[in-house]
Image (cartoon, rainbow, N blue to C red; front, top):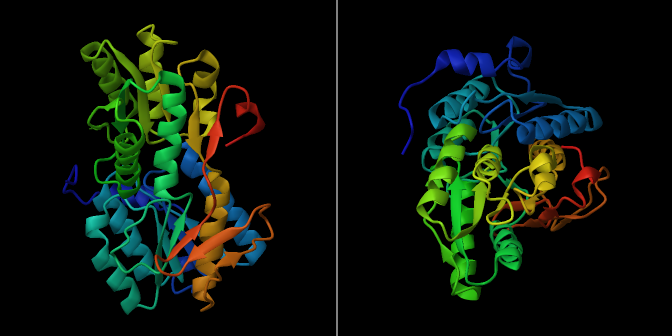
Length: 328
């Protein structure tokens, strides 16, 4: 369900600072619309997109909602389509509502595709994926069970309830537990939207209601700080292992305090770069090879023609021991 039915044109305008008349009818522009602006994860995607735009000779537009509101996000996407931007990518907040926008883009000759979060049944041109949903779900469960034991009770604090990527990761967590760790109790996910303070409260209540809780997973970069802070405040470091899908910069202090045992992610700056690269391919009318070499990357990228997924690579595990090797 959408958290709000309002169309916040003011918020959309504020978040669209990079969009202006100069981009109107500019077929060589590639846009990315994140789920929310102003957080380290999407800031890193923006930085990667800017670098790719410089390397590839296209214009880059970064514009998104000021909170995780699917209606505001879709309004921003529609505005970009109306301006004739060549290719528009979006980290989808609500997969059930984007298909009409994809159709509108096609009608205007705009290449609309997804990145970071997919809407596979929407008709999008391609999905630029950070890692497979199954790989992400399996990795976080496997790493957490190593630390909690195979008979642990584990909680989940997710972000927006409509976010297709977060829900897919949770589904694969549940599948992994069922198939490989039958003695693990995985609690039903609870949703904090995009608010760290709400995630903090949910995690605090979860630990109070489940004194035998051994782990908590933050399934969004916005929920990770709230989960970690709740563990620290409750004096549960070493008793409850926190983890989540969040950047090294977001998790660094929590990894070092012990509130988080590890985090799982990928390099979002590379994801932003690959997003702009894919947008240019679409604008130029080029297809995607099964194995792609990106000069700026030290690893290969793969494309699955059946699913339309352009895959950045496998997930990475960040710990207190290696977190200082990264800066995003």
